[in-house]
Image (cartoon, rainbow, N blue to C red):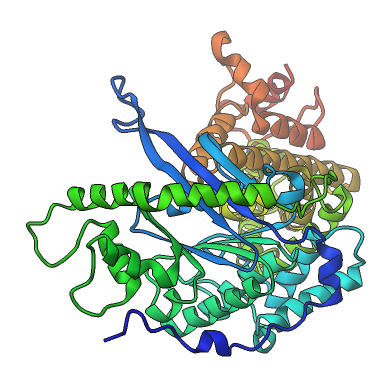
Length: 590
């Protein structure tokens, strides 16, 4: 059994945190931040009946119900509560990332959220959204290059990242890749510290963390919270959500906020929580972990008696909070307002820490390193080689007497190099959706710089593979052995690849769902193939317009133009009908 009032001695025995490197001062001069939130109220609309039901009406759900609190520099606030209590929603609101109908007041040193405050705030999401193939050092260095301002040189940014690695105890794994469930990399605790390190790079005055100990063992969780405790001790304001901390962790929190169905049940010092609930008649029958007891109360469970009414218990706790804590807390907020020393200057900062070109350059280099394992993977190269050689063998040295066979080859090329780049590109944005949301929410870079860097980074793979295919297939299939005709064929396919890749990127960005984007892309490309001009010559007028939006139609015409000229007559093998290939060449240009 754990004595619920016994506080760990390790807190007072913790050594002083190492002094921050000199670069920290240059990275952020915002000073300390006092976070205040008063009567925060949030409602969201949900569709209970589904989108396809006409009678379904959006239902308004009350997620946060008048929550008040204050966190001072040097304090660490833990928000506790069962799943669905509103912890993450409140954390997102305090971090300036929540839209919608948010009522109440949230201030930072007495001011609303601004670009300057955004540049002084770190936000660590529950899931560690990191690139799996980058090393720890690469991850933090690229983040430093993107998030630290131009007033710091590139060399200082790199040294700054190395200092954070040392401060978080990541030196032994700094050259290890991050990894994921399918790729062996650093441990879960080290991955979490890397996520924290990404936010520490800007030396944040205010740090938010969403369940930083989720999925970690007790020892690793202790190390993570100890690191955060040291950060708070250095003058930062730390706010986190946490589900079920051990008693040792619980007493490390300077303040605790307990939520139940969006209602506050307690706000105050963690060490005084048990005394408060005992004073209103809610005391544990046996010694137990304080966080376990608080979560039981938040769920409306007081004992093992199944006949207790959870709703009644919750209502009693809410009323007690309103009468015993709420008024005193608001009085404290008013007193702070009267003596608030503004730590933020009235100076406007640009939205971005770096220029467009710097962002594009860093993102390009990061993308090349992250995707170096897949850009020219053996599977992709093998796929193109197999299809290229197979096509060359099937159409081996076909001459003008097999005109229809050659035309079939050209149409196959237009179809294959319409599908292949489209489905390579269509997964780009859906796969990186979480990373985009995380980094864009932090104001790390412009969307245009990301798009340009990604497009340029994918160009070598998109252009080299079709070039290899054309070199193999063109000469094996016996197409016109002329350099001009060969180059015309090659450039026609390369332009088609670029257009198909752009269409795939657009579809992926518009849908942002891999399954839906795949289905939509298949329907569009099959429609383009049907309207390409190979299968059907006499198209009804009411649907003839579709060929003018078909990539395959234009690619097919370009490939035909690279091999044949209008009016050319070719002698073909005598088979019925004998001359239809000749007429086909005329009709294709009609």
